[in-house]
Amino acid sequence: MPTQFLRLEDVAAWQGCVLAYGHFNTIHPGHIRYLRHARGLGEQMVVALIGDTNTSFTFQQQERAEALNMLGIADALLLLKADELDEAINALKPEVVVLGNEFKNNTQIQATLDQQRQQGGAVQFHAGEIHYATADLLSGSERDLRQQRRSLFQAACRRQGIERDQLLNAIKSWRSTRLIVLGDTIVDQYAACEAIGMSAEAPVVVVRELEHKNFIGGAAVVAAHITALGARCDFISVVGVDSTAELVRQELAVQGIGDSLSSDPTRPTTFKKRYVVENQKLFRVSRLEEHNLDAEVEDQVIAQLQSLAPLAQGIVVSDFVYGVVTPRILEVVHQLAKEHNLLLFGDLQCSSQVGNVTRFKNFSLLCPNEREARLALQDKDSGLEKLNQRLLQITESERLVMKLGSEGFIAYDREPDGLLRSQAFPALSVNPLDVAGAGDSLLALFATGLASGQAMMPTAALACCMAALAVETMGNTPISATALRSYVIEMLLP
Image (cartoon, rainbow, N blue to C red; front, side, top):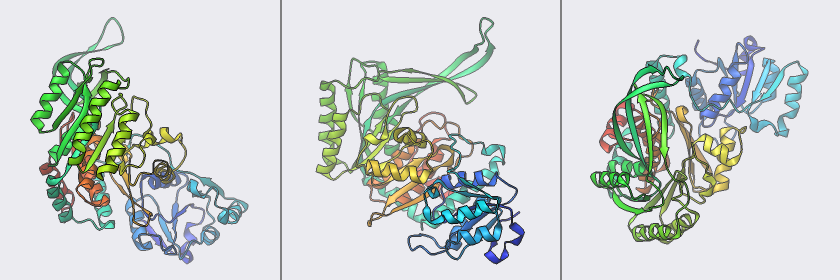
């Protein structure tokens, strides 16, 4: 049944419903979690949408209502003239009023909530359940989900005034951009296997290795993506004295990436082997050392940074917390950024390591995922909006991309007057083949786009397409500007 649009005088048939409330100025996955929770509390769910009473709202009520309608979660939308929650409760007499956690300490609505309780209704505060995976394929076909996400992407572009030709022209401009990527080098090996069966000696799966393929990963694949997109890139990292390091050097040369690698005999080149059966990963084996660099190797890295900084528009710090990005090196990065007016782009990944993204201060852009942000802030309860605002405040980052896995990401941009503008972009790939390199592709695209002088939101739209391409192949395959261009045209066909 399509969502109905209501006014206060039209709600008699909806009494006893579940009532949600808010302005929904920019809808992101946190709102979707909240609305889905409310939807599960009763047979009918109505969203009361605040009117155009606040001059800080980016979009008019009708536009916000259409965005909510597209989600298909609410049964009806109650279009308020202002923010009259009390009148909505009086008219609907809801069984449950569900509000976001940000309303918990709002003294202005306490009398209204007391009124709800006195008439026998309940009040809930909820930020939405936090999930790091998706079950969307259980509730819809892959074709339908793909079309829904494409529609959400197109709607996000319309809301931000982004046109297809604008994105295609932006891709052409990257040839004059030059970046430095600093971080940990990883070689990822994928071993394709055949499942033989269970061992008779123990409950262990037995596989036979058929073939394997090596990919440069970690910060190296960020550099590879940047180069494939058409920009110039110099890669500064540390490798061991081993055959794996030679493999890295050969691959960097093939891809045309500036090789500024330092050798450290006290550590092997980080190597990760993944065993795969029929595109399903069984497990991973890692060979690595995590200790910080000694002073001599640090000096080599710093010398490379000082030599290349005058030639670049920005520095990308891709930290996998294996010891390359030391406090001293990070301090030099900040000094060089000030001296040469460089943009700083940061991503600290701690899926199986211990790290804290708040060590990156005053960056032009940070790209954490939700789990990393919650661990860094020790906050498992706050809604996404509050979490992201707090992370921006603590790090004093100019922009933020909050990665949400299968829910896509939210891009935050700071206006000249200091106000934040945000936009959620969906994950366009419904059934990805390999999500391991999605974050690296996002970081590479954002760094390339912003360093070339592009605005944040058009860059975010391109990054959305970039990530979809990255997860459609097994292993870290650099995404070319040609492939990205073709995908943008497909997604934004009239």
